[in-house]
Length: 112
Length: 115
Image 1: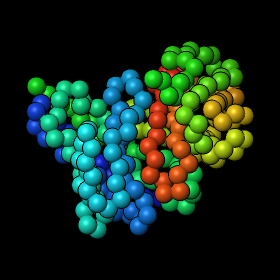
Image 2: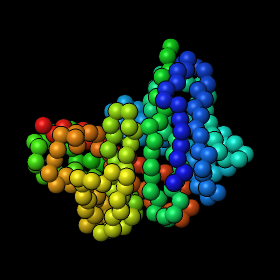
Image 3: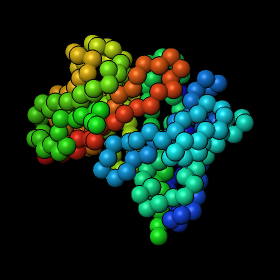
Image 4: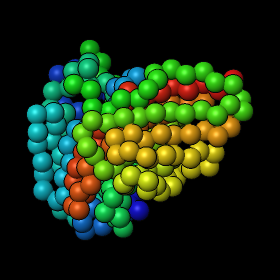
């Protein structure tokens, strides 16, 4: 299984970009990188995913390094509502049935 | 528009009781998952199911079993609840995708306390 490593916590000022890193040095060629977030007392919510190209949607941007061993989730203009735990995961190889394994995530605190 | 529904938001049970946690999804998804979430440990996969009557153990299956009799419903069973099973339980579902690039939808969670 490709495992991920994230910082335990990060702070960001409101209105600034939040850059959340993730290391996945053992990622395999056909494994996708996914990002989810979990706001307090709610279930995790999908944010974005990618394989090797950079991706952008209405919530965030995902930058994946050329060797695919790490990635960065970017929230371009963080708001107080973005305070949450952010999970970087890699879809496990070996089954087509999509086992999802989460790590401990990064606690992002956005402050005024 | 609710997609994944867990039967209870909060539950208190006694040690030794048999506990059923129910999860229903309305998206016709093939895959369903049960996780528990504890402070400092993130989400840990208990069991998952990729089809009706099919199940596979996750990372921490001990003390739990599951049932998938219908596609939309995935039940987590604590045969004899213990205090160390006090936790937040989360259910999720995904489509079955060969390229594994489908997003997961989560329920709101069930906070179970075993006393």
